[in-house]
Image 1 (cartoon, helix red, strand yellow):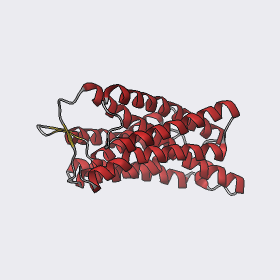
Image 2 (cartoon, helix red, strand yellow):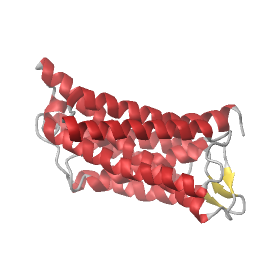
Image 3 (cartoon, helix red, strand yellow):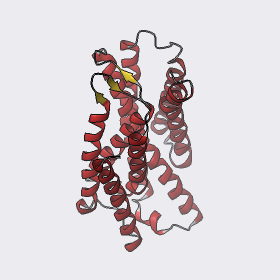
Image 4 (cartoon, one colour):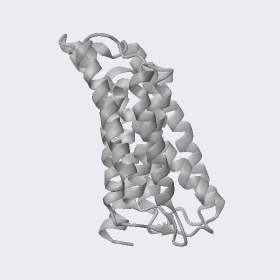
Length: 268
């Protein structure tokens, strides 16, 4: 790994540690955006972005969209969205989980010698589809972390044993509102992703895309049911969390499950 990569990993882990230390030093205090705690993470994101630019835009081989490169890219987007949103919404506690994950994704991306190149001459519409798909997955990844925290928070409140970490989270209703905002935005981007696939991919049900397509559409339908249930029946709590997790699992299988099988197992 390069010095730049090592520095970015250290900054990611340091930010996660600072957030965790603040949690233990001030148990029960609600999470609130603290610019001093988030700045190292933002610097890590900037360094990580430069590393990804050099890794993806290779020349003359083409765009490197290998499994671990995309894994690192998704981690970067998740961290970027989290840290920038944390200045407006009380979600920086998610960084305790997200930032170490992003550091791991960066390490794997740098250490892996597995590549999957696409030509620079790739149609611009297909490039848009790839980008918007990765963005949709990243947005819904943050929603998944939020859903996990909401599940833990709901369970501990029902058992009347909320720990210091749970007491530091915003109220349950606020957490639910944030979750559905994330899911709503992610759903819109996912819809654009599926539509762009229909427009720009000649054979969406080709052999190497059929599993990804079916799983992505299944995830989209799950999120449709979840959002409709929220709007029509006021779904909340565990039922909403289960639907959200089910949709994300389908999406994870679509994006990384199929890519893992094709590139690492079948080596196509």
